[in-house]
Image 1: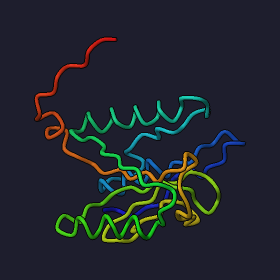
Image 2 (image 1 turned 180 degrees about the vertical axis):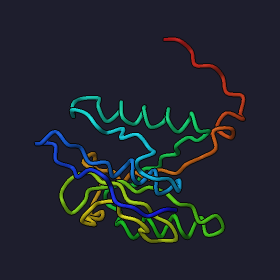
Image 3 (image 1 turned 45 degrees about the vertical axis):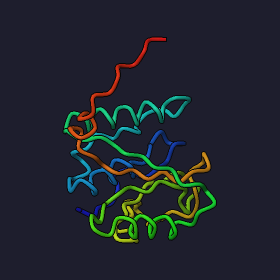
Amino acid sequence: MRPQKQLFRHRPSEGLFGDCHRTAIACALDMDAKDVPHFMDGTPGKGEADRAHDLAEQWLNDRGLCTISILFPGTCSVQEIIESVANVNARSRPVFILGGESKSGVNHSVVCCDGRIVCDPGQDDPGIVGPCDDGWYWLTFFGDLRAAHAINRPKEVAA
């Protein structure tokens, strides 16, 4: 894991969108943030977050990876969440991204491992103080795409 700070602060009123999530992906994958696209860059609007996550997923898939997302309710504390992951996964000690609300009141991503935040890519270390604006904490793990496709799944039925 390569700790680093995001390259862009979140200033949507100036047309600048923070890249904490892209930087968290880079940290977790031991890459430089500049080598990961800034998926969240663009005008915010309905569907933009979904589009950004689709772009990130495709970029990861092209590298043989996939995301595994887990939600925790907003009633949990940050420490309960990261200690729970550490206790249940003590053998593998996974690195994961935790998404929640930062001290600055916006959704933010940090990197966690071993029951603690190991990298806050925010330039001012805003941390995570509560759930995302949808009421959930988002945990993102990375998996091997080969494993995700190893099971012979039925093809989707057209509606």
